Image 1 (cartoon, rainbow, N blue to C red):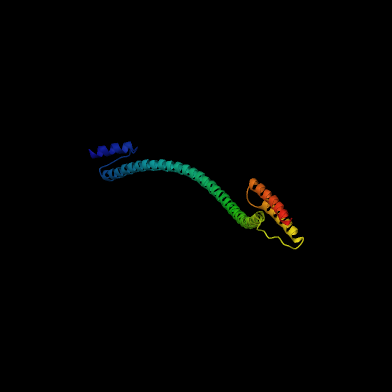
Image 2: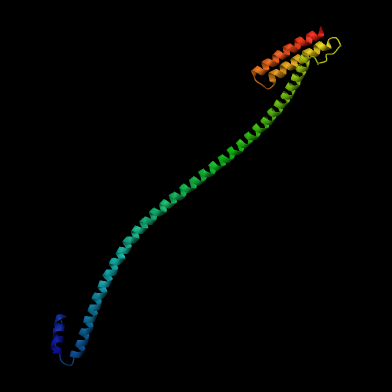
Length: 197
């Protein structure tokens, strides 16, 4: 039975030689080893084919990833250059703003200086204006003492009249107040002339 089965296995493998009972165990062992080797080869071939397919799939993925990586690197480089340009532009704007701020500070300081000068000048003119008004009031009320030296009273009156006119022109107040002051100057001149007579 075993010998007949072995002969059929050999015939399936294209072995049609003579087979006796002495060589049958060896032939059976060789056939079993050959069948096992064939099955192992098929299994390995299937695994190799599968691994080849997986490798090809991974290679395709790697190519895609390489292309994507190149694209990302390019975009990253462009973004980096853009950031550098924006940073430089921002620095330039900051420098310009700082220079403008310094210029404005200088302007403000200069305006403050001129403001103080004008305030001081205004205060001086106001004091002169008040002094002239006081003198004018003294002339009008008759309490202003003219000199008895001939000619000095006329000279003093002219100087007072001129000073009053200048103070009225440069002093504080509106047009109505300046007009009133000019009238007072005229009255003072008349009053001084009357006193002289």
